[in-house]
Amino acid sequence: MSSSEERKLILKSSDNEEFVVKESSAVQCLTIKNLVEDRCVSDPIPLANVDSKILALVIEFMEKHAETTLSNSEKKEFDVEFVKKPFDDLLELILAANYLDFRELMDVLCNTCAKQMENWSVEEVREKFNIQNDYTVEEEKAARAENPWAFE
Amino acid sequence: MSSNFFGVIPQAMEKEDIGSHSRKWEEMDHDVLVKIFQCFDIFGLTSGIGQVCSKVCSTWRLAACDPLIWKTLDLSMLKSNFIKTPSEPYVYVDGPSDKTLTRVLKISLSLSHGNITTLIFHYNLFVSDDQLTYTAESWMMMSTYLYCRCPRLKRLVMPAWNRIKKTGICKAICAWKDLESLTMPSISNPPYLIEEIGKNCKNFAELKIMGPCHIFFASTLAAFLPNLKVLSIRCSIIFKDALNIILDDLKKLEVLNISHCVLIDSPPTLPRRVLGELDESILKKAKRLRKFITCMNDSCITCKRTRQDEGLMRWYKYEADFWKVDEVKSLAI
Image (cartoon, rainbow over all chains, first blue to last red; front, top):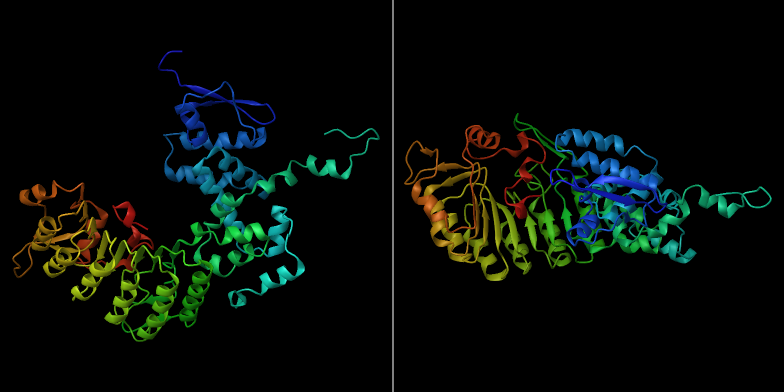
């Protein structure tokens, strides 16, 4: 491989699909960057916590943000469209971005998620995040009674 | 996933089939939740979604109280209730603002469990006008909350405090023994405050002055804050003799930012003589600094605005977050 060729990496999703990406894009993920810098890159790099559907989306974001020819506002426009996804996908992407330590993606996703949650009730949150309420009836009553002036 | 022997997909398998929906969310661990919660603004945190999150389940409740979320109390959005119109003397005031501030403070201070280390106010929160809601009384009450409930405050951003009693400010600031960074307006009688900071805040290192710096201010800094490391005086008026005192007498200074300032020659003349550039002696003195940040550029928008406003920047005329900028990262908001 000549020195002028772009170095590439192979990322493997949890369901064994392989994706070829430029090293220069992939190092936006600090998890991958650390592997590269420590010279621990295996071929391919297995990403046990990210399935192919989500990994494809992460790579789409990654490559867009690595493009030096795009302006910041163009990248922002891309972000706005990118986050128009079902809430479940956003959560999966957040977990992937967290696992890969991809700060830019994490910031965009968390902001989007927070905005969507703004007016949700306790029940809606539990439903959308599929959370088991681990409070007993008494605990729940007590929790709801706290800071009642917050709702004035 | 394939169906079982009888061609029927059992309930449990079906759920997994929908695409790991049920699997993933236990992984929504504390750190991820905290990152999401950090995106809520102070209103959200204290009234709406923040309150909701602490009631969802015990994991969420813990995450909602995480110090990371509360270490910065950014009240800089508490200003939109005031509209000061140029045509005198009309001021539009939203009645509930005083209550809003009190409520937000109460809740933040109780939820933060003493973890607030940065406190940010907007530049027109304590404006001088009797019709505006924040009287000295309000400040006294609020400052009591503040210095009891944020004992570990390290950074205070309070760009204006026109009508507040000196003693109130002094008391509040001196209660914060761990204070390291202060953003303040220019004041006509600096010693009462600067001396107190010097005496009480042993780790004090960074100062940003949002207003003119005259020789009296500079010599007060030199006298009472000899260990000052970072000083930012931007978008304002700075007098040449004050600049010389800063460069000569603040021996521990490492970073000095005087970007976009109107530099006035000394000794004073009438009319004032504005200097277009820094002379050799100043540049020589500044060489010992780790960072000397300047901008005196006719084509710089910020320089132009400062000049247009004659050195007393009218922040309200410009973009909402314009006043938050600083070339020194630790002083930016």
